[in-house]
Length: 77
Image 1: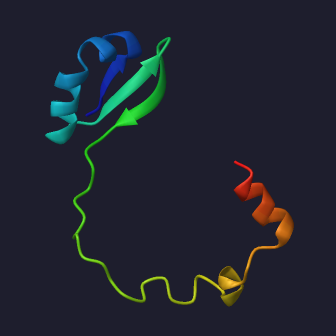
Image 2 (image 1 turned 90 degrees about the vertical axis):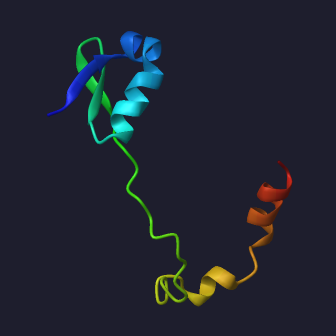
């Protein structure tokens, strides 16, 4: 079951809420009584990288040089 907490209370008890979320409790953050966001624990990753995982998802055009107009936009920042 989810715990619903208003933003003001969440700011006051944020550390405690983090501990509860880490322990597996789902916490719904509410703003003016309406659900706004969800605080849940991160799923554990396997920590291992897998070569070729994105094979076929990135086309060869990804590796083409940028057009001058787009390159200028990146360099002007």
